[in-house]
Image (cartoon, rainbow, N blue to C red; front, side, top):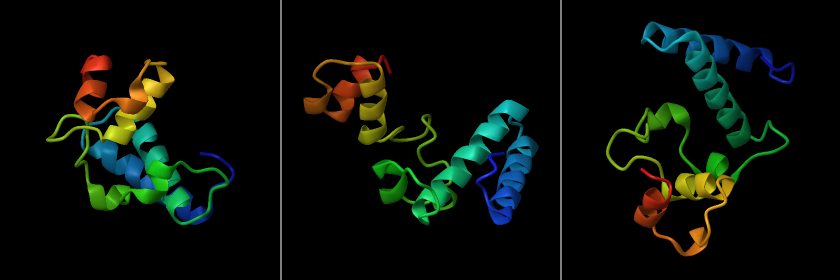
Length: 107
C-alpha cells in the first residue's frame, strides 16, 4: 500500500482485498482490484494529484458493481477501448467506433 493513502483508504483497501479473496480471486488479483478501486475513489473525491477523465467522470466502482467486467453485456466502454488502442499505437483509432476498436484490438 502506498504511503500517500490515508488510514481510511488503507482500511478500505484491506476490506476490498479480503472480499475479493473470499470470492475466489488470487492474492495478486485481489490486490490489483483493491488498489484500482481505492485509487479511483481517491481521484473522484479529489485526493490524488493525477487523475484520468475516465476515473472522475465515471460512476464509482462500488455503484458499478462489475457491470463492465469485460465479460458481461457491453464489455469495456469505448473510452476504455480507445485508451487501450492508444497504448498499442493503433492507427486511425480516433475515428473508430466501439465495434471497430474491438476488432482492431482483437476482441
